[in-house]
Image (cartoon, rainbow, N blue to C red):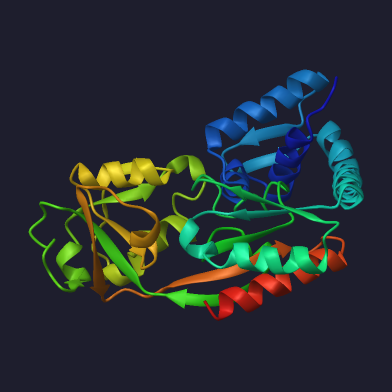
Length: 297
């Protein structure tokens, strides 16, 4: 069969984690979707790769054989992709939101003046992948919001922090407040990242629901979204959402207001790349330019 490298990455994650739950969180996919892909791989190969039980996913003999070969296959493919990118002189930079990359275009312009033979592609990802493409090997580096699931496997440099506030419906009783106390929001319906992120109990979702600041008070989820337009629409419809202070400059809705919040930690923005990535001088130069710009933005 012709194998999709994504199937091999999914297989490798389940083999290493020993469970669908852990692998789904690591890959930012839902557990049902991951199960479907593993079955697709098994059906294509005509063998069972895992013995499923309540305690997890144990490799079969055939699974152990494949697991012994997959790392070299994926490493070879990743090197081929990177080599192709170097030959084409293309660097791919992922990001999630405009507020985190405000000064990046200036850094890219600076890089292009120094390295005119290289092209930089900015790729925006929705909240279904808080790593902005890095976890799936779709970009060379990414500007990310910290913390997020799986960041310990990446090389991450923190660049700057910005305060968090709250998005409220314009008709909300707190909409005219100069500053909102987070405790006033504890019983409000919050907008949450979707379970399809694979991070339902992970750092990303919990951080934007401020679970650590709730002192055990349960979260009330009023809507699940993965894109800014859905996010703003959910707030306009009666939910609330924590958001970085830069949001009003880049996203707006006539029925939504932004207010500062006290009692929650600030948002941290970082620059991330794969730890095992082949070092590329041009990428190092681009990341250095971005770090300089964002650190003083």
